[in-house]
Amino acid sequence: MRIRTNSAKYIAKLQSLGSFNRTSKFILQWTSNQRLKKDSPVGVMWKRGLLDFNIEPCIPFSCLTPNTSLDRVSFNDQLLSSAPKHTQHPEMMRQLSLELINNIPSQALVLYTDGSKSDSGRTGSGIYAKADDGLVFRCRFRNPDNCLVFRSELLAIREALNFALHFENSDIYVLTDSKSSIQYLKNRPEIREKTGQEVVSKIATLSQKSRVCFQWIPSHVGVFGNEEADVLAKEGSALPSASSSELFTSEIYSIHKAIANSAWRNPPAHDWYAGNRPGLSLQSVGTRSAQTALARLRSGHIKSLKFIDKEKTFPSCPCSCPASPAHIIDCIGASTRQLWSGEGKRLVELLEQHGVMDLV
Image 1: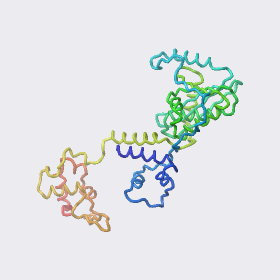
Image 2: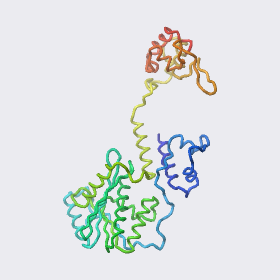
Image 3: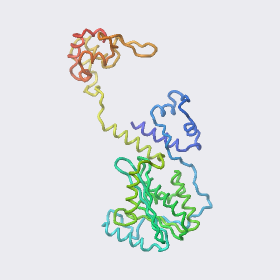
């Protein structure tokens, strides 16, 4: 399971490079009527269902030129007091947030953004803004299922900046409760994902005419704009369809990891696991022929099995059906559970009573 999960991560990262990587370019141009070399890495990935074509592209270079200046952009991931949120009373955090908001210039455009994810994996983003002329802007939209909350926050910021591009305010404040988004945008030279680069490009465009400030505020402490954005994000996750189906490489890895963890926690259903020790056939009580019959049934290679044109074939059972191991057990009124438990002796007796011992 670990190999499958890591393989999914590797192939998704490779595919995200698009035309910038030769192997990725081959995968993206590949169609189902083309043959893949047997047991080649790409062939194995295709057979295992790991080729996903809804991956957000990565661009292996910065979207900013060396001459691009973001001197008019600031990123603040703390309030006026640097005390951690979990050590402060919610009312104290609310007062600190309101104090910070009251210090924002009255002519500034203030945008609140938020992302949401439900227990079922549905995600959404919400934006709330109020301009100095009283215009109120509310926006909500759904994101791809299993999208990270961090990415939902980024998508909300991107949409908020799109809205801000239509205004000529000298100051633009984006208030978000996602510290990870602010820290991610701070490290803009290292951003390679398409969504992140789009956000950085819009920031660069806005900074040419306005001062842009990204400010962290705590969530769920009663700040009106943040609460409105949170409600909009939850409503967005309930919308019927997403605007895009692309996922980050890390999100695809998380999906496969969750599937692997779920499979690992569920006990295996095969009757083989009813056997509590190896060498079960040799340890069963009975004649050598009985031990041999049980061993052949357990392995599936009974003596009447033949291969014709690389296909398994079985002779007819007395009931005129192909005498496969599963059919023989069913035909004599037994169960595969008996085959793997301590009831081998009873199973041999049934085989002899029904006259099918020679088939095994």
